[in-house]
Each structure stands twice: as C-alpha cells, then as structure tokens.
Length: 293
Image (cartoon, rainbow, N blue to C red; front, side, top):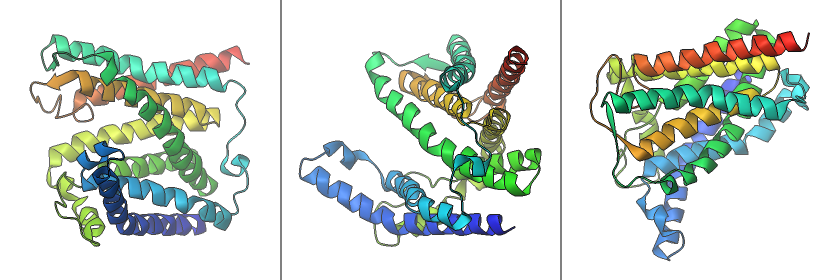
C-alpha cells in the first residue's frame, strides 16, 4: 500500500509539473521559431507541448521517486540481466510489426485506406527515431518501474492487469487539438480538464481504450516472462513504426465501426491484430523456453 500511495504522489507531481511547464515550453519554442531557430516548432499546437511537459515531469521526478522507494538496482523491481537482449529486441519488433503490416495491406486492398500520391520512404525515415526513443523511455517507466512496484505487493496477473490499465489510461487521456488556441499560464490545467472529453464518445472509449489495454497486457506478459525489458521494447517499437508509417503513406477512406474506427487503435480489427501478436509472443516464449531446458 505504501508503494501505491507513493506512486499516486509521483503521478500527481508529474501532472502538476506538466501543467505548469507546458506554457513555458510553448513560449520558448515560439520564440526560437521567430528568431529562425527550428522554425518547424511554430507549427506545433499547445497540446503537443503539454504532452512533452508531462514526459519531462516524469523524468525530473524519477530519480527522487526511486530514492524514496529505496530502489537501487533493477533487481529491486524484479528485473534481471538478459544475455539474449538483441534476439528478444528483434523478435519483439517482428512479432508486433508484421501482423500490423499484413493488416494494413489488407485494408488497402479492401479500400478502407488508400495510398497517398507521391508517398516516399523519406516520409517514414523520421519515424525511425520516434520508434527507437519512445519505447526506451516508456518501457522502463511503465513495465520497469510501475509494473515492478505492483509486483512487490500483488500477484503477477493482478499486477499485469493494473499496469496495463495505467498504460492505457495515460495514453488514452488526451485533450482535443486546438483546446488552447490562446496560451496563458493556466492553459495546461485547461488541457488537463479536457483530457477526459473522449469519454463522451462510448465507441471511442470501447475501441481505443480496449486496444491500448490489450497492448499493455502483451507488454506486461513479455516483461514478466523474460524478467527483462528488451522484448517489450521491441514489441513497442514495432507497433509504433508500423502504425505511424502507415499513417504517413496512407489515407483513411471510411469508418466501419465496430470493425474499424478513425485510426488503427479503434475497432475490432486492430484489437484482433493485437491479440494475434499476443498469441505469437506466447508461442515464441514457449519455444524459447523449450530450447533452454
């Protein structure tokens, strides 16, 4: 219970920091753009800076939080060195990205999506960095720290379910674009209050939240079984790169709820693709275990 209370305090500090720091980040970026430094920053809305401020807050408070919990080494969170880290990283990437890519090919053939004219690999290359960096930050945080803390007080499956719920809630709560058209000191708190607006759309909640929850379950299972973060990092990177790249080269032609929503997180088809990856992950882990026994 003490760990849970401390985890809530960490969340509260991170959110407060993000709400206060977001306007400062936005104004700093606008100033740089006006002086010809990184002019592309001028094109980002305030909500983008709000999300980055939250990530910055999570990083700022991470070290004091670990000290508070007396976590000194990965073993304190149930993690062990993985001599086969590169294999797990590559396998994870393939087990998540290949099913998504096959689904995307099917959606284009069935004309739910169409390829954008003039699309090229140059539009995808910048996403490689995102697919590499985001899992390296989020997996140590969600599967390393949060799931590790939950495992100290709960049995494995309740800890997996709760960590997946935290993961899906954090990713699902997002204020609509253009929530703050004029930025003030309190704009971060406005964005925070509007982060719950998506719950007004039941189908979006059912579709998007469920798929994110399923992704969290797969990542939690991979972490628990391997006692390492490399397989979850590979899985996470594969999902990001395959879905984000498709968004760059393809355009949605129709919404066909409940099968397919406005993006590749919403609908029964994305959920089925995620569950397929879970089956493949379980099959791979069983095969890997049989080879090392």
